[in-house]
Image 1 (tube, rainbow, N blue to C red):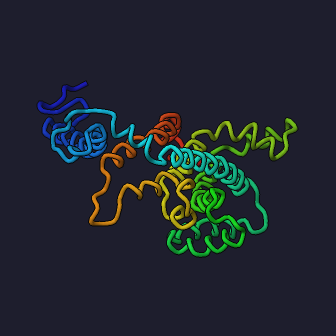
Image 2 (tube, rainbow, N blue to C red; image 1 turned 180 degrees about the horizontal axis):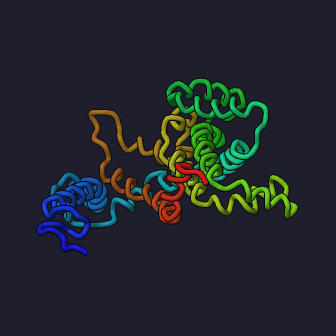
Image 3 (tube, rainbow, N blue to C red; image 1 turned 180 degrees about the vertical axis):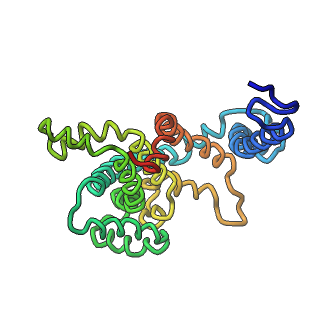
Length: 285
């Protein structure tokens, strides 16, 4: 083995290139973390000093106490959590079964269904609100959480179906054939053989569907009209009154910190599967 040229690191980069790379990565991390850190520190400041540049001015939990005791935050929090969980469960169930069918079976209308899932992703939410609102109104579901679950599934299911189809394509079909020889039917093969192997893909779709319902506000603002049914993303608008009144930054910063906890927990449990799930389907075999 020859010696490395002077001024090069073990990976073959020059010292200058290595310094520039690390400086860029550190800068990117600071830019990404700074707003989160600033909002977190601001949430512990008194309302009168919320705009102070000093990040450690009289820290206290008053903002959190006021948020939890004088607003409907806990109700909105529970509404958002329940909506996200139901959307995640229904979305994964529909996406996994549809993705497996598109991956393994050749049935009439298969290509049309695939194109339908793809084309629905091309329409912005602003166009879909009116027809979906009309459907929900006809069904008597306006101002109910069921209407939001159905609406969120229209966003999540097409994308997740395509993602899971790509993941199922990467699982050898010989496993299905071996399961059939052992006496398993299509559903038994799907449930007992394919799903355990598809955990990374399921983790990605679970994370995506959860975030779709957790942070969505357009459908919630159109379908809900009573305070006790608001979601977090929509309910927090109350903290931003119309001008000339100033936003309630003390409540907003505290709510912004608390609203990240459920999404962070879902990411924590799904993170080890995310990379594998996102790259699945790029190669087959």
